[in-house]
Amino acid sequence: MDRFLIRGGRPLHGEIPIGGAKNSALKLLVAGLLTSERLVLSNVPRIDDIATMRVLLAQHGITVEDVGGPGGVPGAGQVLSVGGDIANTEAPYDIVSKMRASILVLGPLLARAREARVSLPGGCAIGTRPVDLHLKGLEALGAEIRLEAGYIDARAPAGLIGARIVLPFASVGATENLLMAATLASGRTEIVNAAREPEIDDLVACLNAMGARVTGAGTGILVIDGVERLHGARHAVVSDRIECGTYACAVGIAGGDVRLVGGQVRHLRAVVRTLEEAGIEVVEEEDAMRVRRSGRLRGVDVMTEPYPGFPTDMQAQFMALFSVAEGASMMTETIFENRFMHVPELNRMGARINVHGSSAIIRGVDSLSGAQVMATDLRASFSLILAGLAASGETMLSRVYHLDRGYEAVERKLSGCGAVIERVSG
Ligand code: UD1
Image 1 (cartoon, rainbow, N blue to C red):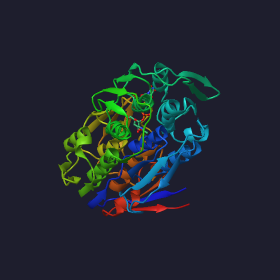
Image 2: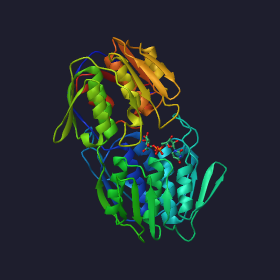
Image 3: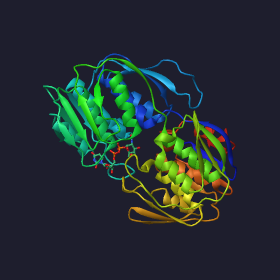
Image 4: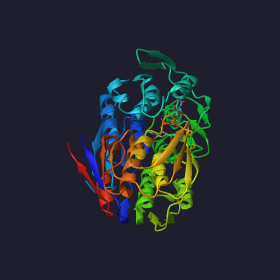
């Protein structure tokens, strides 16, 4: 298993390319299930979750072909062509349990093949994460759903029928599953209290390019007029706001001046506000988000919320940042339970963090010290890299596979700006 060896204490200077959004690209690949024509996606990040999604789609009979793209250049992205006829409507446990986003094939399979059997995702490192909202919404669209032997068995023999669905919580995944299913339902569907994340706008744009009739992206109410069939299209994946925010934190904690090329400030308002309150300068440039820090970091109180609020996917990275800030910070997590698994590891590096229920108090220390630490989930892993960039001495981060699921070429992007980080294999 690969590990990262980090020698801290170097400020970052230069440019880091920001890739296409993992959380958008995964759903866009799934959208390929909705048509037999080719959907060509560009700016797809080269990460393990995309490879897993390709395996899942392949066993449904959908081929995903590489059709060019500047090979090997970090951030340049790959171009993938998705399409084919659905040969198998079962999403097996071994893939779904590896990647929760697999649940998103449920709606599209039901809509196009009128049946689906998808493994329940099961336990997950960040809380229980049920899928009840996905299932209730699909039932409202006329699907018959049974849970049996750890699988969701769903059928809609006469096709899905448009309905008004009010989500009690603006779940990202439920919004996407229902949105995709509704594109091929008969009549009109309204999803009220729909999630407003930029990745959902991106999915709507792609679906509309495929012939869907969806309005209301970003407003919290999606209106979908079902069509009989969707066709092929070309679409470029939106830039990854979480990758951009994560590297902004890297500059924040290590100091320096870096242009995050392709980063979009308009998708990161809450994050930028917090960076600025913490003493980090952010400048919006035409093609980049530029981040600088020379003075001392300051603590800030933050609460995670659905978009446009502060993203839960940036929580762990900011906790690393606040560990070395002046004064105390409070981080309150409202989206997921049990999402403070990075805390014991940060504390082993000298941070002073206490967790009380869904809040954590971070008392800033003057410096962290390198240690052997272990990654527990995707974003938590990066918080340990950030701590390692600021720490004195060496940090050895194990279980890097968590990181490889969602961040492309981390060591190349960081070392290109002066960080000392290397991948140690075996
Ligand atoms: C997506 C993102 C993830 C991000 C999260 C919140 C992907 C692949 N993942 O996850 O990175 O952290 O949005 O921004 O895009 N819930 C229910 N019932 C449901 C569905 C969700 O109770 O049927 C709860 C979850 O347990 C959780 C909360 O709603 O507490 C948010 O989940 P959701 O917005 O659905 O997140 P995901 O789509 O799983």
